[in-house]
Figure 1 (cartoon, chains in turn cyan, green):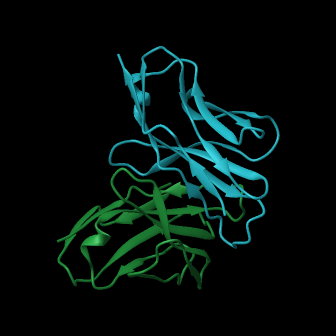
Figure 2 (figure 1 turned 120 degrees about the vertical axis):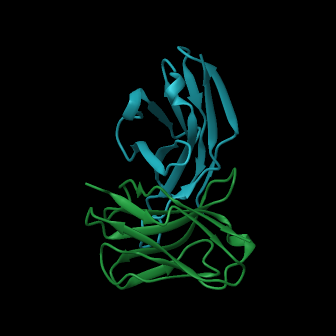
Length: 117
Length: 113
């Protein structure tokens, strides 16, 4: 079975400071990892993904994430936070060796990011 | 390019009523999904489809039904609505293959009273 944990319900950061949103995962095989962002009253928007290759993945809006296989983590980062980054962030995982026919993802519970001016 | 569209945006149902949530995508994606998101929680998969005529249960299918007669449309049917089905429902689609990201619709906020 695959699972995802986002240990922080909320992360507070001042505008201009770096931000990190944490994610750890568990899969049987190799992971496919995704980050999504949800703004109020909107659907989820794809930010970035790790499939294979370079452990540092760059995505939309200046976000990046680092895949760490030994720590089974995929933390989301941004060097300088903006107030407009305030939103709900979801990490998701799929096992490359999953036996399901569909592209089913397991989502974490979400982390609310609050960026204050 | 509209992406994934859902109707209605909001709906209030009485206990025991039924309704269909509509979902359409214009990206020619084979895979489509229905999720529910409860307050303060992540997403839980209700049903998914890997192509027209093929559907399968997800994590929380009880009380719901789906059909997939075309590539574009994937309606979700609620029969005999219950308060436990109060939630926000998201439809999503993706290309075929495990490495592809999912594209989400704007959601339907459903209240059952």
